[in-house]
Amino acid sequence: MTVSIAAIGLGQLCTAGLPIYDAMEDVAIVAGADVSRPVRERFERDYGAPAYDDYRALLAERGDDLDAVTIATPHTLHYEQAMACLDEGLHVYLEKPLVTDVADAVDLVRTADRRELALVVGYQRHFHPTYRRIKDLIDDGHLGRIHHASCFLGQNWIRKFDDAWRTDPSLSGGGQLYDSGSHLLDTLLWTTGTTPASVAAVMDYRDHEVDVNSALALRLDRGGRTVTASVSVTADGPADPGTYEGFTVWGTEGRLSYCRDALTVTEHGGSTTEYPTDEETGFEAFLGRKLTDFVETVRGEHPPTVSGSFGLEVVALTEACYEAHRTGTVVDVAEILDPSG
Figure 1 (tube, rainbow, N blue to C red):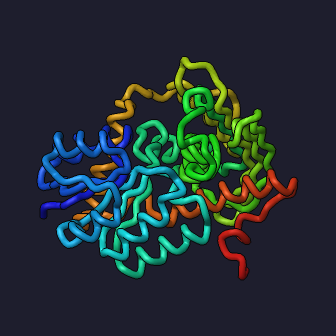
Figure 2: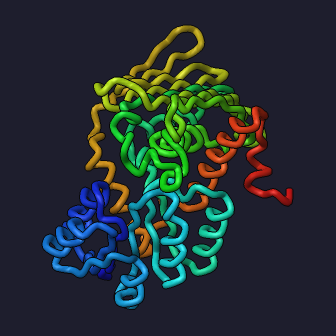
Figure 3: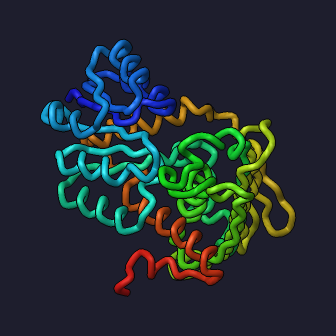
């Protein structure tokens, strides 16, 4: 089966992904859309396919020729674009976050389910071999019953993107918490196998229009048991390393720690096991795994590794964080997911 794909948003991230699609057997890049003339011209030159200045024109003229669409556009545009593609009967891959509004996320997930279409979110750590190992260690009981988790992420982000759409709340929906911080929230929920229950939050905008620093206190649920967690995110770190990230999980039988390619499990009693982290973990490797997974899902080979319903949980938690900061209260995430109770 040849999978015919169009790309909406032909910027830097899509530019990295298109050669991966192009190299896949039985995948055809049919069309693209972007508001920038230079990137449209580059796309047409590189792939011999038409590029449109409006995604709606693309769908109107080429929708019948397509199986799927990959979307890499500013966050607040995701809902309208993804819904138009689902309404056209197309499978959808969205770079994170899914959307920036819980009601929109619910609408997309329900529409995809009703139409039996794949809705996939590009959270790359699900394809990171070390984070997969972390999830396996937790699920296999190496830590006993987990009860606490702590994670942090820092980047040289606010200075890098100060004049870009990422720091324009009308396009990004928020700052670092909705950008790289979204990966951290995803990783926390996925590896620990938890769902978000409640959150308190403190944020600092540092005279910018979007959040720069976030400190979160969370109550998570794992099979009916509480896991307490803390999350720290900053967008004003040094340029090297580009991303500084760490993750620690405590359980009744020991502690797991991961930071800068060092993964250890320390058992009660002091025995420590170090796990190798030398697998291929570059950006292109992750991107290739994500896009391959999407194509395989479109072909019906397996369910998506990161489904829209999982992306919905991350959106609900993120929106709860912003509400907790605005109101100075502890916010119930379940009420955001289901206001009717």
